[in-house]
Image (cartoon, rainbow, N blue to C red):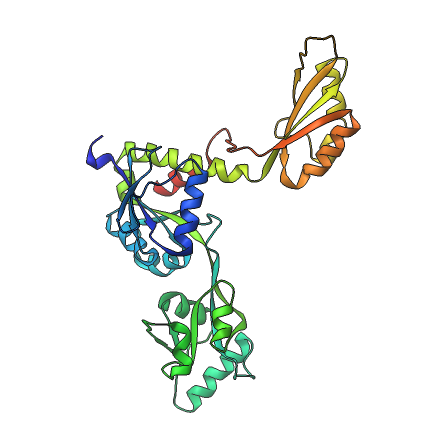
Length: 338
Protein backbone atom coordinates (compact mmCIF):
# COMPACT_ATOMS: atom_id res chain seq x y z
CA UNK A 1 0.00 0.00 0.00
CA UNK A 2 1.36 3.41 -0.95
CA UNK A 3 2.03 6.08 1.62
CA UNK A 4 -0.83 8.20 0.26
CA UNK A 5 -3.34 5.46 1.08
CA UNK A 6 -2.25 4.96 4.69
CA UNK A 7 -4.97 6.17 7.09
CA UNK A 8 -3.30 8.37 9.70
CA UNK A 9 -5.03 8.69 13.07
CA UNK A 10 -4.01 11.03 15.90
CA UNK A 11 -4.68 9.77 19.44
CA UNK A 12 -4.19 11.47 22.83
CA UNK A 13 -0.74 10.74 24.21
CA UNK A 14 -1.42 10.91 27.94
CA UNK A 15 -4.02 11.43 30.64
CA UNK A 16 -7.55 10.12 31.16
CA UNK A 17 -8.51 10.75 27.53
CA UNK A 18 -5.56 8.63 26.36
CA UNK A 19 -6.45 5.77 28.72
CA UNK A 20 -10.08 5.82 27.65
CA UNK A 21 -9.12 5.79 23.98
CA UNK A 22 -6.74 2.86 24.35
CA UNK A 23 -9.35 0.90 26.33
CA UNK A 24 -12.05 1.55 23.73
CA UNK A 25 -9.90 0.54 20.77
CA UNK A 26 -8.67 -2.56 22.55
CA UNK A 27 -12.27 -3.63 23.30
CA UNK A 28 -13.10 -3.14 19.61
CA UNK A 29 -10.33 -5.48 18.49
CA UNK A 30 -8.29 -2.47 17.40
CA UNK A 31 -5.59 -2.60 20.07
CA UNK A 32 -2.81 -0.07 19.55
CA UNK A 33 0.84 -1.09 19.56
CA UNK A 34 3.18 1.56 20.99
CA UNK A 35 6.75 0.32 21.65
CA UNK A 36 7.26 2.84 24.45
CA UNK A 37 5.53 5.93 25.85
CA UNK A 38 8.17 8.28 24.46
CA UNK A 39 7.51 7.35 20.86
CA UNK A 40 5.13 9.50 18.82
CA UNK A 41 4.13 6.74 16.41
CA UNK A 42 2.25 3.48 16.79
CA UNK A 43 0.19 0.99 14.82
CA UNK A 44 -2.94 -1.14 14.95
CA UNK A 45 -1.88 -4.72 14.12
CA UNK A 46 -5.45 -5.64 13.10
CA UNK A 47 -5.40 -2.78 10.56
CA UNK A 48 -1.91 -2.62 8.98
CA UNK A 49 -3.14 0.15 6.66
CA UNK A 50 -3.42 2.50 9.70
CA UNK A 51 -0.64 4.62 11.21
CA UNK A 52 -1.05 6.11 14.68
CA UNK A 53 0.34 9.49 15.75
CA UNK A 54 0.32 10.32 19.47
CA UNK A 55 -0.28 13.99 20.31
CA UNK A 56 -1.52 16.19 23.11
CA UNK A 57 -5.31 16.18 23.04
CA UNK A 58 -5.28 19.98 22.70
CA UNK A 59 -3.17 19.73 19.50
CA UNK A 60 -5.10 16.98 17.72
CA UNK A 61 -7.66 19.32 16.15
CA UNK A 62 -4.82 21.31 14.56
CA UNK A 63 -3.21 18.13 13.21
CA UNK A 64 -6.47 17.11 11.56
CA UNK A 65 -7.19 20.62 10.27
CA UNK A 66 -3.77 21.06 8.66
CA UNK A 67 -3.89 17.59 7.08
CA UNK A 68 -1.07 15.96 9.06
CA UNK A 69 -3.55 13.19 9.93
CA UNK A 70 -6.87 12.01 8.48
CA UNK A 71 -8.70 11.19 11.73
CA UNK A 72 -8.28 12.18 15.35
CA UNK A 73 -9.79 11.50 18.76
CA UNK A 74 -9.91 14.45 21.15
CA UNK A 75 -12.31 16.28 23.47
CA UNK A 76 -15.47 17.76 22.00
CA UNK A 77 -14.70 20.96 23.94
CA UNK A 78 -11.51 21.45 21.92
CA UNK A 79 -13.33 20.81 18.65
CA UNK A 80 -16.17 23.19 19.52
CA UNK A 81 -13.71 25.95 20.39
CA UNK A 82 -11.44 25.51 17.38
CA UNK A 83 -13.93 24.63 14.65
CA UNK A 84 -15.52 28.08 14.40
CA UNK A 85 -13.69 28.88 11.16
CA UNK A 86 -12.42 25.51 9.86
CA UNK A 87 -14.76 23.89 7.34
CA UNK A 88 -12.36 21.04 6.47
CA UNK A 89 -12.82 19.38 9.88
CA UNK A 90 -15.96 17.29 10.41
CA UNK A 91 -17.20 15.65 13.58
CA UNK A 92 -17.72 11.99 12.69
CA UNK A 93 -18.73 10.77 16.15
CA UNK A 94 -19.44 13.31 18.88
CA UNK A 95 -20.03 10.93 21.82
CA UNK A 96 -17.58 8.08 22.31
CA UNK A 97 -18.72 7.55 25.89
CA UNK A 98 -15.67 8.56 27.97
CA UNK A 99 -13.73 11.67 28.93
CA UNK A 100 -16.95 13.34 30.05
CA UNK A 101 -16.71 16.88 31.42
CA UNK A 102 -18.44 20.28 31.30
CA UNK A 103 -17.35 23.79 30.41
CA UNK A 104 -18.72 25.92 33.25
CA UNK A 105 -18.66 29.41 34.68
CA UNK A 106 -17.28 29.58 38.21
CA UNK A 107 -16.97 32.47 40.66
CA UNK A 108 -15.27 32.84 44.05
CA UNK A 109 -17.18 31.23 46.92
CA UNK A 110 -17.00 34.58 48.70
CA UNK A 111 -19.43 36.03 46.16
CA UNK A 112 -22.44 35.03 48.25
CA UNK A 113 -24.83 37.18 46.21
CA UNK A 114 -23.84 35.56 42.89
CA UNK A 115 -25.25 32.08 42.44
CA UNK A 116 -27.04 32.17 39.06
CA UNK A 117 -26.60 33.48 35.54
CA UNK A 118 -29.13 36.20 36.35
CA UNK A 119 -26.98 37.34 39.27
CA UNK A 120 -23.96 37.38 36.98
CA UNK A 121 -25.77 39.56 34.44
CA UNK A 122 -26.57 42.10 37.18
CA UNK A 123 -22.96 42.01 38.36
CA UNK A 124 -21.61 42.89 34.93
CA UNK A 125 -23.84 45.99 34.96
CA UNK A 126 -22.50 46.99 38.36
CA UNK A 127 -18.95 46.64 37.03
CA UNK A 128 -19.89 48.76 34.01
CA UNK A 129 -21.35 51.51 36.23
CA UNK A 130 -17.98 51.65 38.00
CA UNK A 131 -16.18 51.96 34.65
CA UNK A 132 -14.88 48.38 34.74
CA UNK A 133 -15.37 45.13 32.85
CA UNK A 134 -15.86 41.80 34.57
CA UNK A 135 -12.70 39.79 33.79
CA UNK A 136 -13.19 36.13 32.88
CA UNK A 137 -10.13 33.87 32.62
CA UNK A 138 -10.55 31.11 30.04
CA UNK A 139 -8.93 29.09 27.26
CA UNK A 140 -12.28 28.92 25.49
CA UNK A 141 -12.67 32.44 24.13
CA UNK A 142 -15.04 31.66 21.24
CA UNK A 143 -17.38 29.44 23.23
CA UNK A 144 -17.48 31.74 26.25
CA UNK A 145 -18.08 34.91 24.27
CA UNK A 146 -20.76 33.35 22.08
CA UNK A 147 -22.60 31.80 25.02
CA UNK A 148 -22.59 35.01 27.07
CA UNK A 149 -23.73 37.08 24.11
CA UNK A 150 -26.65 34.68 23.64
CA UNK A 151 -27.55 35.35 27.29
CA UNK A 152 -27.42 39.11 26.51
CA UNK A 153 -24.38 39.55 28.74
CA UNK A 154 -21.99 41.86 26.90
CA UNK A 155 -20.06 43.84 29.52
CA UNK A 156 -17.05 41.62 30.20
CA UNK A 157 -13.51 40.99 29.01
CA UNK A 158 -11.78 37.66 28.44
CA UNK A 159 -8.35 37.01 29.92
CA UNK A 160 -5.99 34.47 28.32
CA UNK A 161 -4.38 32.16 30.90
CA UNK A 162 -1.50 29.76 30.31
CA UNK A 163 -1.13 28.26 33.78
CA UNK A 164 -3.64 26.89 36.28
CA UNK A 165 -6.97 28.47 35.44
CA UNK A 166 -8.45 28.03 38.91
CA UNK A 167 -5.79 30.27 40.48
CA UNK A 168 -6.67 33.32 38.36
CA UNK A 169 -9.22 34.91 40.75
CA UNK A 170 -7.09 34.42 43.86
CA UNK A 171 -4.02 35.77 42.03
CA UNK A 172 -5.95 38.88 41.06
CA UNK A 173 -5.65 38.84 37.27
CA UNK A 174 -9.26 37.73 36.71
CA UNK A 175 -12.54 37.96 38.59
CA UNK A 176 -13.93 34.55 37.61
CA UNK A 177 -13.25 31.67 35.21
CA UNK A 178 -14.82 29.62 32.42
CA UNK A 179 -13.16 26.22 32.45
CA UNK A 180 -13.58 22.47 32.10
CA UNK A 181 -14.55 20.36 35.11
CA UNK A 182 -15.50 16.73 35.53
CA UNK A 183 -16.15 16.34 39.26
CA UNK A 184 -15.92 19.92 40.56
CA UNK A 185 -13.22 18.94 43.06
CA UNK A 186 -10.57 21.28 41.67
CA UNK A 187 -13.02 24.19 41.74
CA UNK A 188 -13.85 23.55 45.38
CA UNK A 189 -10.20 23.17 46.32
CA UNK A 190 -9.60 26.65 44.90
CA UNK A 191 -12.63 28.12 46.68
CA UNK A 192 -14.66 28.50 43.49
CA UNK A 193 -18.30 27.59 42.87
CA UNK A 194 -20.15 26.81 39.68
CA UNK A 195 -23.04 29.17 39.10
CA UNK A 196 -26.53 27.84 38.45
CA UNK A 197 -27.35 27.79 34.75
CA UNK A 198 -23.69 28.30 33.94
CA UNK A 199 -22.97 25.17 31.89
CA UNK A 200 -21.65 26.33 28.52
CA UNK A 201 -20.99 22.90 26.99
CA UNK A 202 -21.21 19.17 27.73
CA UNK A 203 -18.13 17.43 26.39
CA UNK A 204 -16.63 13.97 25.96
CA UNK A 205 -14.24 12.20 23.63
CA UNK A 206 -15.14 12.52 19.95
CA UNK A 207 -13.84 11.39 16.56
CA UNK A 208 -13.06 14.01 13.91
CA UNK A 209 -11.76 13.82 10.34
CA UNK A 210 -10.28 15.93 7.56
CA UNK A 211 -13.07 16.16 5.00
CA UNK A 212 -10.84 16.99 2.03
CA UNK A 213 -8.32 14.19 2.60
CA UNK A 214 -10.99 11.54 3.11
CA UNK A 215 -12.87 12.60 -0.01
CA UNK A 216 -9.73 12.16 -2.10
CA UNK A 217 -9.06 8.47 -1.30
CA UNK A 218 -11.42 5.53 -1.73
CA UNK A 219 -8.93 3.30 0.09
CA UNK A 220 -8.89 5.61 3.13
CA UNK A 221 -12.67 5.64 3.08
CA UNK A 222 -12.78 1.85 3.09
CA UNK A 223 -10.34 1.70 6.01
CA UNK A 224 -12.38 4.32 7.86
CA UNK A 225 -15.47 2.17 7.30
CA UNK A 226 -13.81 -0.84 8.94
CA UNK A 227 -12.64 1.35 11.82
CA UNK A 228 -16.11 2.82 12.38
CA UNK A 229 -17.98 -0.47 11.94
CA UNK A 230 -15.95 -2.26 14.59
CA UNK A 231 -16.29 0.62 17.04
CA UNK A 232 -20.03 0.95 16.46
CA UNK A 233 -20.72 -2.79 16.74
CA UNK A 234 -18.69 -3.12 19.94
CA UNK A 235 -20.34 -0.11 21.59
CA UNK A 236 -23.77 -1.35 20.50
CA UNK A 237 -23.04 -4.76 22.06
CA UNK A 238 -22.87 -3.17 25.53
CA UNK A 239 -26.62 -2.65 25.38
CA UNK A 240 -27.46 -6.36 25.02
CA UNK A 241 -27.13 -9.78 26.63
CA UNK A 242 -27.58 -13.20 25.05
CA UNK A 243 -29.61 -15.77 27.01
CA UNK A 244 -29.65 -19.50 26.23
CA UNK A 245 -32.05 -21.88 27.95
CA UNK A 246 -33.14 -25.52 27.60
CA UNK A 247 -36.89 -25.84 27.07
CA UNK A 248 -38.94 -29.05 26.94
CA UNK A 249 -41.53 -29.14 24.15
CA UNK A 250 -43.20 -31.07 21.35
CA UNK A 251 -41.56 -29.12 18.53
CA UNK A 252 -39.64 -25.96 17.73
CA UNK A 253 -42.82 -24.32 16.44
CA UNK A 254 -44.73 -25.18 19.61
CA UNK A 255 -41.99 -23.76 21.81
CA UNK A 256 -41.78 -20.68 19.59
CA UNK A 257 -45.50 -20.05 20.04
CA UNK A 258 -45.16 -20.33 23.82
CA UNK A 259 -42.19 -17.97 23.84
CA UNK A 260 -43.79 -15.35 21.65
CA UNK A 261 -47.09 -15.34 23.57
CA UNK A 262 -47.38 -11.85 25.10
CA UNK A 263 -43.64 -11.31 24.55
CA UNK A 264 -44.37 -8.13 22.60
CA UNK A 265 -45.97 -6.69 25.72
CA UNK A 266 -42.88 -7.36 27.81
CA UNK A 267 -40.31 -6.49 25.13
CA UNK A 268 -38.36 -9.75 25.49
CA UNK A 269 -38.88 -11.37 22.11
CA UNK A 270 -35.25 -10.62 21.21
CA UNK A 271 -33.77 -8.63 18.36
CA UNK A 272 -35.56 -10.65 15.67
CA UNK A 273 -37.22 -13.35 17.77
CA UNK A 274 -35.81 -16.48 19.44
CA UNK A 275 -33.46 -19.01 17.88
CA UNK A 276 -34.60 -22.58 18.64
CA UNK A 277 -32.53 -25.70 18.00
CA UNK A 278 -33.00 -29.37 18.85
CA UNK A 279 -30.80 -30.70 21.66
CA UNK A 280 -29.25 -34.09 20.79
CA UNK A 281 -28.06 -35.98 23.84
CA UNK A 282 -27.95 -39.50 22.46
CA UNK A 283 -31.21 -40.29 24.20
CA UNK A 284 -34.80 -39.80 23.12
CA UNK A 285 -35.92 -36.44 24.42
CA UNK A 286 -37.94 -33.35 23.57
CA UNK A 287 -35.45 -30.70 24.69
CA UNK A 288 -34.65 -27.64 22.65
CA UNK A 289 -32.05 -24.92 23.11
CA UNK A 290 -33.57 -21.44 22.96
CA UNK A 291 -31.43 -18.33 22.50
CA UNK A 292 -32.66 -14.75 22.66
CA UNK A 293 -30.76 -11.45 22.64
CA UNK A 294 -32.35 -8.70 24.74
CA UNK A 295 -31.44 -5.32 26.13
CA UNK A 296 -29.53 -5.30 29.42
CA UNK A 297 -32.43 -3.81 31.37
CA UNK A 298 -34.69 -6.67 30.22
CA UNK A 299 -32.46 -9.46 31.56
CA UNK A 300 -34.55 -10.50 34.58
CA UNK A 301 -37.94 -10.13 32.83
CA UNK A 302 -36.57 -12.34 30.03
CA UNK A 303 -35.31 -14.93 32.54
CA UNK A 304 -38.72 -15.01 34.25
CA UNK A 305 -40.50 -15.34 30.90
CA UNK A 306 -38.28 -18.28 29.93
CA UNK A 307 -39.02 -19.92 33.30
CA UNK A 308 -42.75 -19.60 32.69
CA UNK A 309 -42.47 -21.54 29.44
CA UNK A 310 -40.36 -24.26 31.07
CA UNK A 311 -36.87 -22.86 30.59
CA UNK A 312 -34.03 -24.26 32.69
CA UNK A 313 -30.22 -24.37 32.75
CA UNK A 314 -30.10 -20.76 31.59
CA UNK A 315 -26.79 -19.12 30.76
CA UNK A 316 -26.14 -15.45 30.02
CA UNK A 317 -23.32 -13.97 27.97
CA UNK A 318 -22.42 -10.58 26.53
CA UNK A 319 -21.84 -10.35 22.78
CA UNK A 320 -18.57 -8.80 21.64
CA UNK A 321 -20.20 -7.10 18.68
CA UNK A 322 -23.71 -6.36 17.43
CA UNK A 323 -23.78 -5.48 13.73
CA UNK A 324 -26.86 -4.00 12.08
CA UNK A 325 -27.71 -4.44 8.38
CA UNK A 326 -25.53 -1.37 7.77
CA UNK A 327 -23.44 1.01 9.83
CA UNK A 328 -25.46 4.04 10.86
CA UNK A 329 -22.32 5.95 11.89
CA UNK A 330 -20.65 5.32 8.54
CA UNK A 331 -23.77 6.34 6.60
CA UNK A 332 -23.94 9.60 8.57
CA UNK A 333 -20.23 10.13 7.96
CA UNK A 334 -20.70 9.74 4.18
CA UNK A 335 -23.54 12.26 4.20
CA UNK A 336 -21.29 14.79 5.94
CA UNK A 337 -18.57 14.23 3.35
CA UNK A 338 -21.00 14.94 0.53
